[in-house]
Amino acid sequence: MKSNKNSVIHKNPATESQVRLEKRREKAKKERRSFLDMMTKTGISASLLRSSSLLGGVMAARYASAAGEKKRVIYCYIHSGSPPGTWLPQSTSSMKTLSTAYGPSGFDVAGLCHFREVNTEVTGHIGVQQALGKPDYDPHYGTIDTQLASVLGATTPYSSIYLGSNATASETDASVIISTGGLPKDDPQDAVNAYFKTPLPSTGNDNTYEKAFAAQYDAINAIKAKLSTEEHQRLDQHFDALKKIEDRIVALSQNMGPDLAACTPQLPANYDKKTNDSMVEHAKLQADILIAALKCGLTNVGVLQLGNHNGAGWTVEDKFNNLHNGHSAAHSAPQGTFEKMMAKKMEVPAYFIKRLNEEVDENGSSLLETTAFVQVTCMGNGISHLPTDAPFLLASKMPGFKTGFSSKQTSATARNFHAAVLDGMGLPSSQFMLTGAKGDGIDIS
Image 1 (cartoon, rainbow, N blue to C red):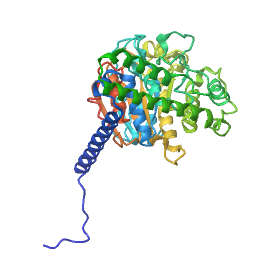
Image 2 (image 1 turned 180 degrees about the vertical axis):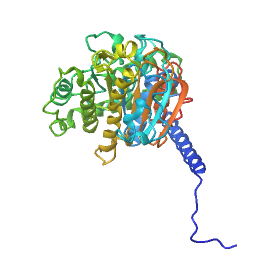
Image 3 (image 1 turned 45 degrees about the vertical axis):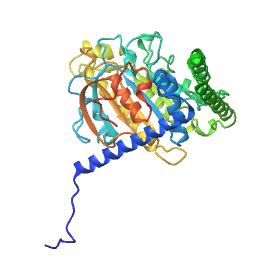
């Protein structure tokens, strides 16, 4: 029987999805082989790479840079999680109460998002830094943003930029701060003055790369007696090469800084930092400032903290016109008040994603094509304080991540989520301090 040339050939979506998955796997295998080949040529053994998370991360970033790939990451924190059944959307057009801002009646970005519910592993108010992959307040290692700052921030004037909106409120101790990178700049005007109206640091805002170089050299010196002459020579050659890279980084930051006058964001004329109920609008201004910083090349790592785990600093009316802050909205307000407050705050990450998708970099590409946007929280349910079903989200057009919408409840941990993000960015998650976490069960890459 002859085929009808006018007939429509229907493709099998499942088959197409499998083909795309296999292509991603092959690309990942090829990149891993190329990366390991580079390690072999530099004389770095696999055992040394595994033993040093910092060295592994730095070399992974160097590999990406040599391949011409730009990698950026933004973390956006929303305090107190979400009540059960209020987060995961059913489709790009069927949102729940707390995901409304991502849907067609909001900023219409759900098609770019992977919505997940994960386990933060910490019950109550003591685990705010677990939102960024740190299970306790152990001072010996930092949250994932600070670890990435040492990897992705070596060639930018600022290794990372940490902003907030009512993040500290009246408190400044570590218990309310999600990052180990210091205190956030809580006021948009302060952020503009600090990063756009202040002369750039001549060699970046820290000496992270110098410290990393020195730490690795000290480690090698400690074991030189156990190395063969050939290994000794290869390692010396490797560190000579790293020193040349460091010299080029310094020269670049001194002579080729961005034009701050051309990229300074403008705050609205009616901006008022003292207005208590402007928390969400202030956070949107902070998002605009971070986007300007990415476009100007000021940083590759940004953190925006919206509120803190105590819910202080912003109020909402209940159905009886009584005002509640985040804490009382969760515990003593009429039903629905807490959801109303949290749904309003979710406007910020949805707005952030839309702006990242619309803004273009120096190559004319969407910022979302080179940026992983990660939404995090410190609790699963702010009412019960349980750690399960915490609302996390990834939005990115980077090639290492799946494209399109997905929504999934999982028993995986917040640390697993962060590991999956690192893997999708092409960075070896095993080389970062996430306490043995893997990207298993997250399904975003």
